[in-house]
Image (cartoon, rainbow, N blue to C red):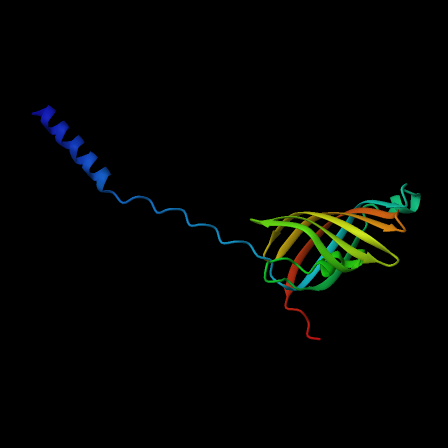
Length: 164
């Protein structure tokens, strides 16, 4: 009798397991897209060299911060306006290569920079309302390196762009 009871309990448990609902499938994460608007940006220099060697003046700039507020437009493809992102590093910037996926950004851009050009390599993480990038910039004039810098770029969206 005891064997029959145990057997019936095991059969009932197996049937209950078979009829139990399958766990819901994990929902696919929504893509992370930068949100355009007014952004507070902080650049912290980690390396700074005018020409090809670091002068004492250059070395003094390492660790310094600059803060700015910028209207950062974001295109339909989710990429921030390259010129706004470049800040003081150049004008009329164009992306050369970009990879954006799951909050990770890797890219390069070329900009006009006075009488020369600047090339920026950017890598880091982003959310809809924040960025944390490492930027390496090389400015050339007449084919010669005039300035190379590395810095962290931290940004936080503060609201909508000011009108005008």
